[in-house]
Length: 179
Image: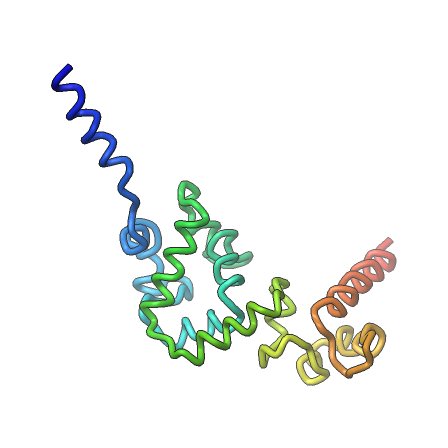
């Protein structure tokens, strides 16, 4: 009995210790993010992380947790045993390691405040102002033509809700043509 209590305490202490973001990074993310395999942003690469963070931390967390379609970024980097909180902590660690400026972080926070999560909208929103202008849509004739049709407030731009309505309508129209 007197040996059992110390053994239990040692076991309890080892299970209570949480892995640090640095350790989680080393064990689960470093193999791709240290050398930059498959365009993974390297740890400490300020310019790459500035590009990634520009669309907000929410999207960065979402990409790390859910993965990024058509890339090597699997959900949770392929480590499904990691919790969402662990993944966010590792992302925070990698962003901090990039040494971004206060202005870059503030810009990401402003975009987060817009609460836009549609990856395609964000990809099209080149200047990250939360709306799509004719210039941002000019490469896609269908989207450009749809701007006037779905610009509900007639400001000459599409916000995320207007863009979603446009995409849904185009999807239905494409399906009707296919049938």
